[in-house]
Image (cartoon, rainbow, N blue to C red; front, side, top):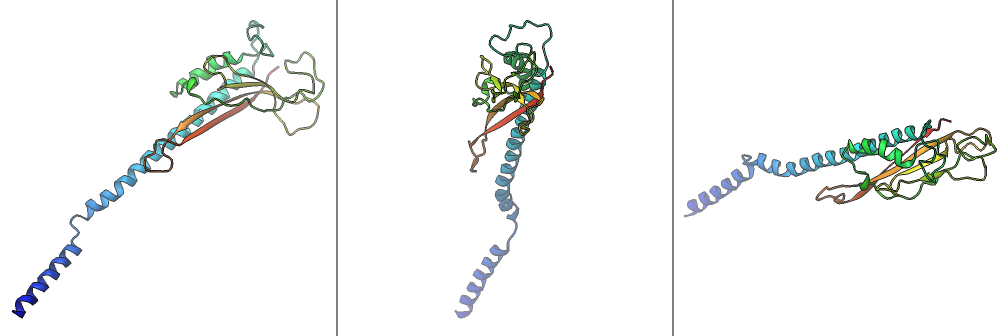
Length: 214
């Protein structure tokens, strides 16, 4: 009787030892643990990569728009910009439709989807008495650059500022460098389930300045 009981106890212990040391399904357990982490890393790479692509696209489009807006329009109608001054340079609507819209569309970004932003607070290049024929203000009392926004779907989302001080830290009143700046931003929403970044909206800004050519 005692022998039977001992054999049963040994058999149970051996069975538990076999189960404890059995590694036949270890790969499945490891796969079940690792695969969610792997998918999270892949999703994170895609979402952050797309965010960086949007930033690069906005910056490139703003740079091209500022370069276009910094060059005089030659013999074009001087009154085509309405209240925008100086009229010798492209209007904000021209910059939007001829440069910004195509550049953003190539990256599947619609201007209507841009974030509404406040008017930029940038210094004017008018720091003294300069050539009255200059397209930029000649009065040193104007401390803020003149900024405009298109009247269509880019209203309040794209800001074109002219006569921007390219060297705002230069307090000298002699011959400042004037430029054009383009400012815009895009609201990017992360879809990252089971993390603190899920449905978090991040505003990606872009602002570029180019020297005006008189």
